[in-house]
Image 1 (cartoon, rainbow, N blue to C red):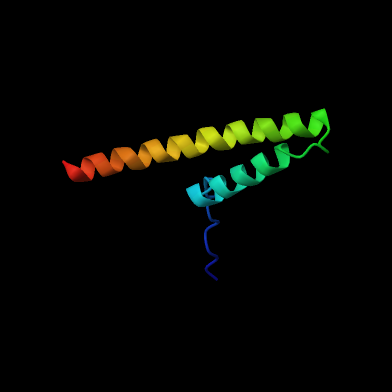
Image 2: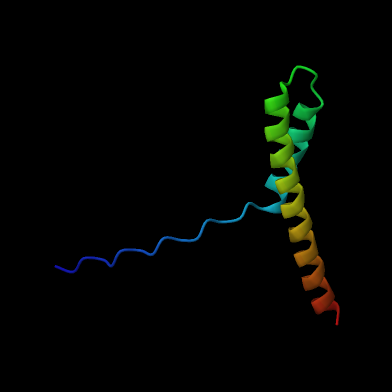
Length: 71
């Protein structure tokens, strides 16, 4: 019998821009809530900073591709 070769694990996909932006907006809304504890607020803030950096990186990559196409 021929058994299929085990698949190599795929690298984790980076989240698409729209999902990252939607999550960032949700984080901002939650941070505006006065009911958050300091610990919860710090965790959300850290997540928001990471999401913001990822969105910015994706926008820069898209801008670079557009510039290449326009040349």
